[in-house]
Length: 176
Image (cartoon, rainbow, N blue to C red; front, side, top):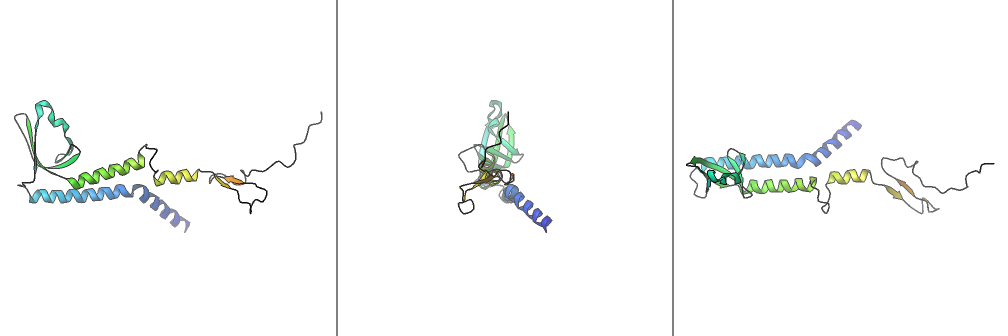
């Protein structure tokens, strides 16, 4: 029973930490499949964007290629319908992929929230868990400790080692 509980706890921590990565990959695959089917069905789409980049001036360096058929330009993802290079110019006919752009930006936002160094933001659940494990707990209950004594410990310390007590009698004096 303990082994089963440990396995379930490990699985729940794994889902908490890595679950949205898996969810992102599944969503990304679905969006890419939708776009591929849209590209197959709409070869002559009049809503397609057309770009011309002068490769001799290095204008094509502004394109961030994700794959051979997908690139990012000015923060937006585009899926390529047709690409050709003629006389030092790169001609691209493509469609804007707003759904994947939104998905990627939200994923990057989640990563930044979890692993970023912004101290003013709320910490991730994993950071909260580990900080709670090492936090000192102090109990000062007048019913439990009528002499205004306190019990202070952390989850990794023994409460018996950290009980604060007053010295009742002075230590013995050496006879000299």
